[in-house]
Length: 279
Image 1 (cartoon, rainbow, N blue to C red):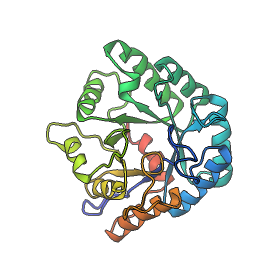
Image 2 (image 1 turned 135 degrees about the vertical axis):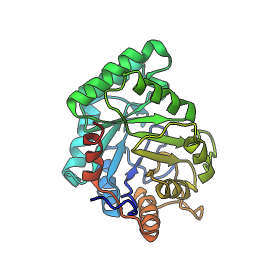
Image 3 (image 1 turned 30 degrees about the vertical axis):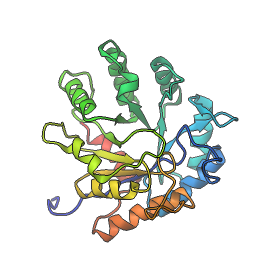
Image 4 (image 1 turned 60 degrees about the vertical axis):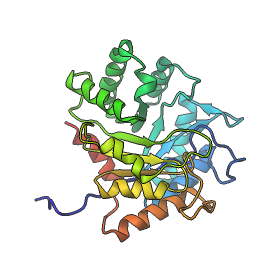
């Protein structure tokens, strides 16, 4: 029997590179398949259960490409085996259309993928294609995570579930605390808007945040039932403001905080079980 008083197991995902930052921002940001694989192993050892992967062009620009994803996934798998869930991004970054995003997703057929609601469903006319994509993901056993930048998007997603457009009764989401802006620094209080009484709840939700208070933001989320995503995609600094030496250092900071507060860390098997429990 599940103990209702036992804290949930907190899953930590690492987003080690994103689509914007380069070696000029931090020399340890992983851009190649080999660098991603080494980072994956370091972050797994630090306590991560999932890696959120972006791939890049030779000139470091953002890329959505099935072959590049295949190379990165193979390299990571060689290093960590099944020790991490590998999640690819479908982020457009102003370069790719929804059709191109979905096309790459289907060509890769990854274990997991993140999808930004505002990118893939900019209006009601895009809902059928989004519903078809999620139906394909369910059929192919691809774990979805819907990225939500605003509480109104949570309301919209819940409405799509009620209307039968989502092929699960519930779906994992990621709340983004802040925006991609210069010197953006998220605060734990930014989470409150997503937890307001009139905002729908999802059984598996994670948080990512910008700037040196990243660890405080995701730890606050963990304390109220959420999970964490950290990494160089959104933050380069430790809580004291010093430059983090690696992605693994950011994972270690949150893993230590979570454990000190009496919570266990989730592993890759726990994350994979999320899909099975969606119904």
